[in-house]
Image (cartoon, rainbow, N blue to C red):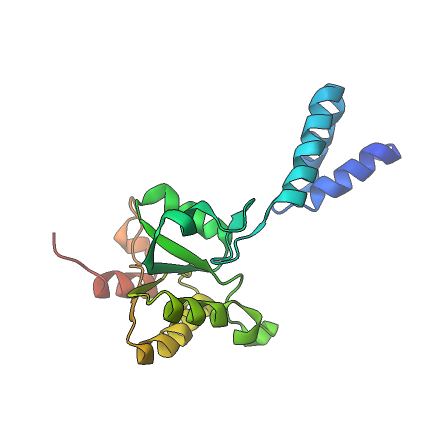
Length: 197
């Protein structure tokens, strides 16, 4: 393994800590920084510090914002709340749909094996919002994993006695996928969630 001088190794080490960045990519990033102008590097470093200092969670939904209340909470329909696990899920949903409602970020999913219980994610805040804003519908948009399904069912059981309509995003076969390669659970869900055309 190649030995780098300490400042470069330190830079590689920090880049390697980023999600999805292996050592080879970290080395490329480090070389890019070293070859960049001082102004570019300062601007890059300042943008990281500024983001860390200014970005926080919205006081209502838990999404990232640089204000007390995010733009979606200020302008969206408060009667419809889409529940997601993480802020990045909002970005994914906003790209593909003109939703118009608001979101609620749980910041995790139930996972008793990992010690994540209802008290560790933002379920209590969701229940308060539902009652305070007289929410008509809660859309569960958690991933179709064991943890995502368990979280959706748990929250649904808490909301139904309150008279709130609880729906689940449809799940099934991805566009461009051959049916023969789809797993049984996904295929079963696709049949159950079929709709008229």
